[in-house]
Structures are given as structure tokens and as C-alpha cells.
Image 1 (cartoon, rainbow, N blue to C red):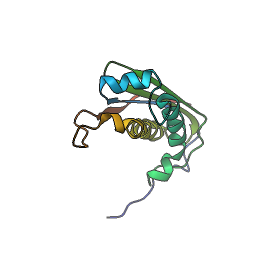
Image 2: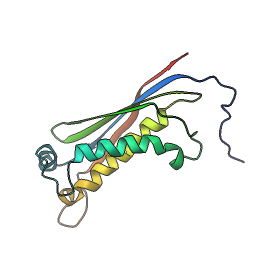
Image 3: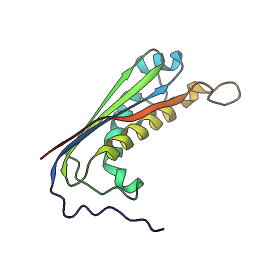
Image 4: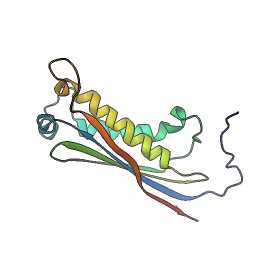
Length: 146
């Protein structure tokens, strides 16, 4: 069986947007460190926002069946809950193919960035992560307008 990229050359360019969301479960103490900007590696929210924007633009480089597209807009939104940091990313374009993978990539890589920045505080006495968990990465909205 062979693999190939889908041919979108005959499709018209239309407005498309997608919103993806995901969360990372963290210790309450880690959430407080993030809230109070006490993470040794820096401001987790600012850094993860930048990572989300960059990752949306690079989705096609990580996913071989994803078309390289012009990204018109990326808006990450990050919020803290009692035991979670959640990230939602809106991606917009005028293209021949959708931006779901770009939004999902942005959320996924931004959540991995959070983990990397706070892993020091999440490890147990054996160096394991019994509590830390990335949860529910999904597309929450997709729009296509001619």
C-alpha cells in the first residue's frame, strides 16, 4: 500500500478557521508557581503562547500529509484551573484545506512546553510523574466559509 498527500490543487481558497483545546493536569503547587511567575525557566504562559504560535506555523513540517499553508492568524488563550492549565488555540487562513491540524499541533506542542518548563516541580521522589497528565486534546470548532 502506498501513501500520498491529498491533491487540493483544484479546490478554491476559502476562509477557514479551527479551534483546538487541551489541558495538562498539574499539582496545585505547580499551578501556584505558574500563577505567581515563580517557575525557574520563566513565564510559562508567555512562553507557551509563543510556542503555540510557532507550532501552528510548523505543523506541515511535522506531519507529512499536512499541506504547507499560509497562516493568517493564531490566537492562543491560556488559563489556569485548580489542578490544570488549559490551552485553546484559534487558527485562521484563506486556503484550499483546513487548519485543524495546525490548531491541534499548536495545542499539543504548547502543552508539551508546559510540561518541560515545570517538570522539576512535578517529579516525585523517584523522578517519576505520577500526577502530570496531558488531557483531552481535541478540535472544539471548525468553520469554512466561501
